[in-house]
Image 1 (tube, helix red, strand yellow):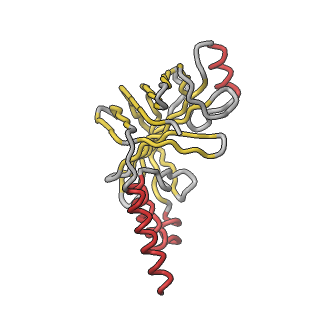
Image 2 (cartoon, rainbow, N blue to C red; image 1 turned 90 degrees about the vertical axis):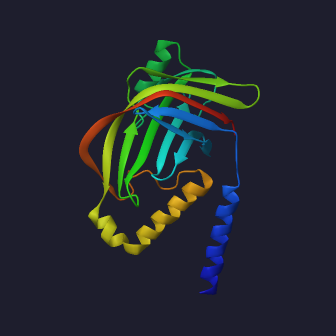
Image 3 (cartoon, helix red, strand yellow; image 1 turned 60 degrees about the horizontal axis):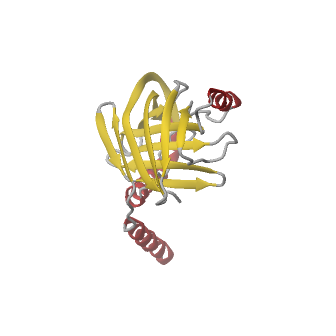
Length: 219
């Protein structure tokens, strides 16, 4: 019992420390006619990196990935061809961007929004091969600016009954902890429903992103 209490207090303390981290990063975009504003962050995993902007109540995530022609993360100034977020770095997508001769690489955009708490249902949007362009400007001060407009294909996801039943209180506890982490740190935590105990529904729509602007300090 004592160990559990110490762990819990340590967890709360670490969240408090994270919450004090501030930055000059900014993101704004008109999402289906409504403004979405938050502070984005860069996340690196090996050769891959992406930019993520998150909000809570409800949980939302807008993620942008930029890549060069070799599948590595890229932040060089120039235009990037926006491609299918579900499978971005295919030979076909890379070849098309190269052949057009005006792109530095490829980009993918994904949006996730919680539409039933606690993380029971989601609305997900993914960029497609629509010949759309994302622009990057890398400044000498270490900041990069990204501007974009895109139409995403929207899908709906519902938690599987089996995941709800088998996960029980433990699954609910994990969801609440993930929401706390997202709220306190600004990093998305287990918000993507795909492969996480959710089923994709038949319903589809579009999500329109307009006047997207992001400015952040490069890691």
